[in-house]
Image (cartoon, rainbow, N blue to C red):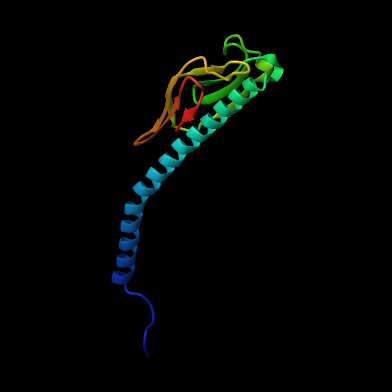
Length: 143
């Protein structure tokens, strides 16, 4: 009569191989997740900038439109500045958790021409992943 089954050595070898593969794949997965979070933050910001510029160029509500980045939230607003905005028009977009934004904190686009109130860069980072959006005098975003 033949016994069927696995020996203790075979089971431990299999578990060891699985643990090694898991240990190798976890840092790769985390790096991809961080990169994805930064890419999502960049996409949300570019979309908000384009929306604000388009609304200003269209003369929507006969007003300037802009965005403000603060505390992990992007606010699309109507008005000459965030402080002087008409709060009823605010749209808030939350950045992915752990993504840090730095650089320009507020951009307002003028009516009709769509030119920005300020130029420069907006930087996003999360651990070793980073991205940058550049806003020039014409309001064109490069990323």
